[in-house]
Image (cartoon, rainbow, N blue to C red; front, side, top):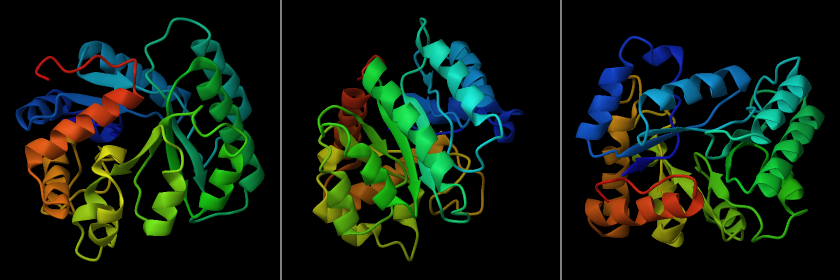
Length: 262
């Protein structure tokens, strides 16, 4: 089982990261992918990954929400890293976020275009964050052949129409996490229209904690609750969900070696 999206390099985990990794392994989570939000967090994720080789994997990217004043400088520094041997398995977390503030559309668009171009140039998958901006996301992606880019549309929570728009990109999957377990979530009615072969599991730790742990800090050990919900929705077993979603994740993130117990 793979958690494709967890921010466990953050301050929320400083005191017990060893226990967090241990609990994940005990829960059957073999690997955890860690998208960054800026250059500092990318360095923190890379440092943490060195402590747990084969288990934790970092990404490099600039999150669209609250772009820092020096965002262009950060992007320049990130690209210099990509030009040299590096440990990063993908470009992320990148994209658009207009949920709270739509005053920086131009900056978010420019930053996203730069990072999409990295994905194409350096053959790395994208970890895409998109809130209240799917139309803008698709405007940028249309400049590339649909089979050129790969990645994950993180934290998908939309309807069938939006899902099918995104799945027109054949090398992408939808990231499904704790929202699928929420009482008022529409995902259980949407997911049957999406092939399981186009889904990966995620937690978005420390956020979006699944039922029955809502209100607590999220962590990779809670991925099985998402897998159980998907098994219920698709009428299959948890083992079947794990097998398919793990294969999906490894197909996208080609710099990651299969787990030893796979």
